[in-house]
Image (cartoon, rainbow, N blue to C red; front, top):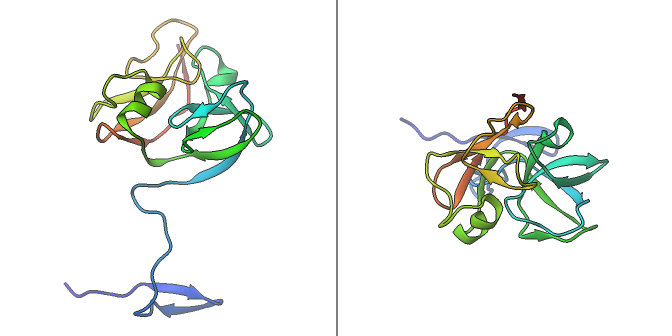
Length: 161
């Protein structure tokens, strides 16, 4: 198979990618992100599932009410202090240390490969490998672990039990 050079947009014109140029695009280890303000009283740490609580503002998501269960993504900044802005990853692969996942998802030793993670109904801002099962709670799939340190974020809409 022949190697082909991609076509790129340069100053409004299409051209073949030049030998000295590189592509600027997110890789597999990234995804779409937005900058949001932390509306929670405390800090939001990496991996925390969040919902949009006001204009350009997020708070810890929880699967016990429809208003807090619609996750927009996971905190991708190491930590976002109250009232400050930080990065929220909407999709793709989020990488964190096993210790960081232990805090964000209540695990021990990080994520478990091929395990699907859900939003907790019991604790705000927590992911869990156990889907809610009580009538009135919402099942919100967050994503699937591809290693002990990487989660493929694929948020699904809430399903009311």
